[in-house]
Every structure is written in structure tokens, then in C-alpha cells.
Image (cartoon, rainbow, N blue to C red; front, side):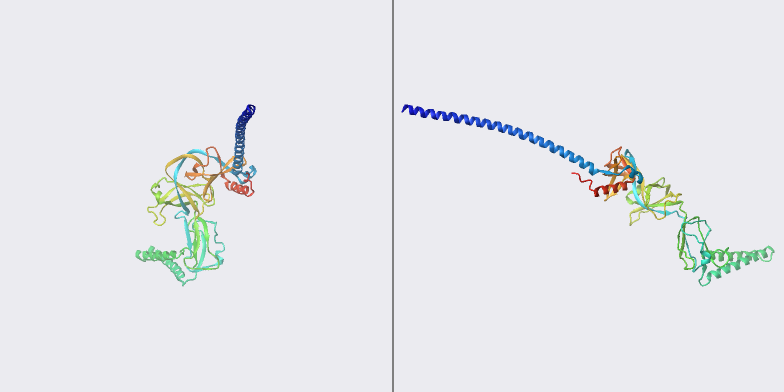
Length: 406
């Protein structure tokens, strides 16, 4: 019995030893495996993150290059006459913008109209000047044969008769045959008749009974509506003649800036449709004394030299008038700025055959140069001529799918 109890106790003790050892070893191994596993996970995550970060950076870099670069070969740049200029730090005078038109100088523009109803005789008008011809004051423009009730012919005949009477009175007065009063009266009657003839467009010195229309000034024939062989009515416009060696620029300054316009020394720069470059005024002619109540603008007129005849009457203009104050910052030529979808942009050359399209934020402009508050840095080369061709190249690039590198 004692032996049986002893054997049972030994069996229980062995079981406890084996159980405890097994639990300890299992926990220890589990701890080591967990530690190793956690370390492995940490290493794998770090490696994965590094690869992901690297891939993301490479992807972003590639996307930036392809999205921003617009390629235009050097040969194509030369073919379109592409020009670049450097963005610089400088000052731009404050200006006010105003729209306007090119007009003829007062006294240097004339409309020649038919003074009476009549026939434009073909045999007398085949050599009449045409638009673009230069005429001198007094040159014959057209000959009209009056066909009205005969008042012109009657008046011309009266002038001729009074001319003869004056000549006769002068001879008689020289011989003391008539008093001086008779001579004075004859001359007076002739003066009145000649004035009436001239008011109808006639010339007392012209022979015959046709009306001779002459150029009222030196200038270019701008318009001609005369057709040989047709009838015209009194007042019908036949020609316009203008001397455009000097022209006027009439601008409409916003009422809010009217107080900053000077009556003397004021000048302006402006652009007109059809030309990229800017023009400059000579001097101010007049400043309006009242604000237009409908448009809320002040009329200002400048004189402009036009000896090269590039400015045409009626052209629309966009002008900038300098006012007090100046702004310092990054400046680029105003010709480098394009408006695309209502947004100002500039094209920057980043390589000899590569360009970037930059959305810019503009500040004050004097017409020639503009402050760029954001989008272009000093020293960068901006396209001042040929930007449209760069824009077309960007469209071609997008259409070709070169921007989809992901």
C-alpha cells in the first residue's frame, strides 16, 4: 500500500514537471517568434514605404516634365521668327487704360459732295482720282453738268454779265465819264453774284456751265462713290480726302481716373488692331471739360505722327496713360502676355527647344512692360514674339497624347 502511494506521488510530480517545462518553453518560443515577426514586419514596411516613396517621386517628376514641357524645334522657332526676352527686376510707372479710335486731324479731312443735281459726264470724268491717289489742293476731282431748273446756269450767266459791266465801268470811270459810286455799285453786284456761285460749288474762273469739283486740301483720296455717266443729287457724297501724315488718337478715360489726367505734358502709348508693337503719342491736344453722362468717361485727344501711314482712320486702339506713382517688381514685355480662356499666361523657354506654359498674375503696366506678381522669375526667358506658335505646339502635343505618362 505504501509502495502504491509512493508510485502515485511520483507520477503526479513527473506530470507537473513536464507540464511546467512545456509551458515555459512554449511561451518563450512564442515571444521570440512574435519579436522576430514584428521585426520582420517593420523591415518589410520600411522597405515597402521606401519603394513607394521612390516610385511616387519618380512618377511625379516624370509627370511634371511631360506636362509642362512644350517642344518646338530650333528650326521651327527660326521659321516663325520666335523672339524671347529676359524677365528683369525693375519699375513700371502706374498707368490707366483707355480705349479709343484713330481719327483725322481737324482741318485735314474733307468730304466733297455734289453741290447741285446733275450728270457725271463720262467724257469729263474717266480720269477722276480713285482711293489711294494723292491729290493737291485745287486738283480737279470731278465735273458735274447741272440738270436742275437752270438756276446754276442762270447764275453763271449773271456773273459773266456783271464781270463785263465792271470792266466797262472801270474804263468809264478812268475817263471821268461816270462817278465813282457807279463803279463801286457794279463791283458790289459782281461780288454778291460770285459768292452765290461759289456757294453752289461753281468757280467764276471756270469756262462753260459745268461745275468743277476740286480737292479742298493736300491728301489721300480715302473714298470715292462717283461713277461716270450717272446722275447725282444735291448733297450726294462723291469723295473723302484726308491728310494722314498726322492723326489724332481720341481715347475715353474712365471717370474714376479723370482727375489724374494732366492738360500739359501728358503722353500715352497705345496698340491698334493688326499690329503687335506699341505706338507713342506726340503731345496732348485737348482734355474734355465734362464727363460723358452715359459712358462715364472723359474724352482726351492726342496727336500722333503717322508719316509712315501705318495708322488708318477708324482703327480701334487700346491706350495707357501714365499717372503718378511707380511699382517695383519682376517685369516682362507686355507682348509676352497672352490671354487664354480669360487667363493671362506667358510661355517660358526652359531649354533651347522646350517651353513651359505659365499662368501668371499681372500687376501695373505702362503698355511696354508689365509687372508679374507670380508665375515668372527674374532671369527666365519669356516668348515675346511667336507665342501663338508655341501655343499651337502645346495643342499638338496634347492631341498626340504625349502628356499621359503615368
